[in-house]
Length: 223
Image (cartoon, rainbow, N blue to C red):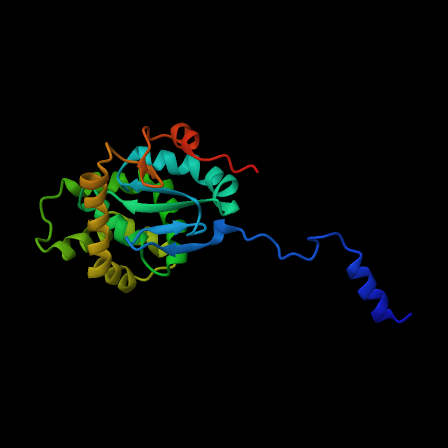
């Protein structure tokens, strides 16, 4: 019996499913929704969680720090739950950070998103100091660039590999601005979230804004 025939017989003896392709880890998959939000996971997941966030919101930073890891590991990875981040901007500082978080390839968004929240306390201290300065540009885009440059946000993003010209371009991106403001209008005026973070699951508003309430609303994906 030839070695080739022996190898074929060995393959035939394998249990059913042994040659199946490895399961997709959906926690590495990022797409853009029609609304302009960033979706982590299977865009066709039967359970779609949408999180409306404000980057100047400490509760949002707390939720991200607490919930990101279990969401990815226990829900998103399976392909049964997707998480979409949408903006609910509250002020010009929040708008600046929202545009910077979106900068570059969409695959970089969730890294930027989590890093900005993890370091929120540091750059917010500089935002508070900057806000007391009376001399600010009148033009909106110039004002947002000034915020980025003088509150440590540009320096923070530089550590993540961004150049100043690239950050300026992201602030000046009219389409990104339009999407962020449209998501903001949706959050406050259509979905009518009560605050940030706010959540919907398959379009239904979740009551409560902490991980305990969100986790209770999610399906059991253990089987």
